[in-house]
Image (cartoon, rainbow, N blue to C red; front, side, top):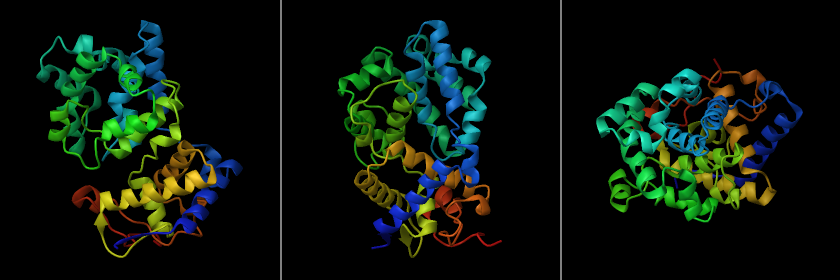
Length: 306
């Protein structure tokens, strides 16, 4: 097998970063970086001011589709502006958006998010998703969540449909598109974390695993790759081992997800190796170039020891 997981090593790694957060060591002395926080609080505030309790849940749900193949910090810095949010609030509200044709809706979405590369595909699906939200769920994503009993695991399954399900397959089933295992789990995490919806059994939603989370385990020996491997194989393996050890150790899934993502984003991305709680456990720095270009994790060191 090309992807080997080491549960014992993963426990050591997660314990170290959780301990560093608790002790506020290294870059965790600055707290946990949550790039989405200001935008979500802005959306909640706008919903309160306009008397639309569904606005923030809708905005967070729809926006999460963009948290893929992009720099999350840059994404949220582009859209965290109260004036722009007020101007483009209609793209999150089906009753307002659906008076326009698909071209107008997608143009509004593109103008607000200003996406690049892969995420342009989200714009292409925006009018479809907003139509599903309006016509099937009364313009309120919470009705979709209620339909599934507020069960985190069922929500993730319903959004994912199946691993690597194609957009065409999801459209034929009449379900939301662009949400795979990572983004579905992230929807549950953020909705619950920011008080937008109270789920039943949030740990059942799993952990959102992206490049930043997976790279940490690859670079520290929790997951071993002997050659470049398909992204889906790697993230599936990482999700499996993290889910297993999180459950066995009684950890909070959100906390595990956040601290590992912070190591990748704030530590590896910025090469803050001396501030990293895993500095002694890490033996490389892997690049995301092959991840973005070829859909593969390449385990070779690209500059850890520069």
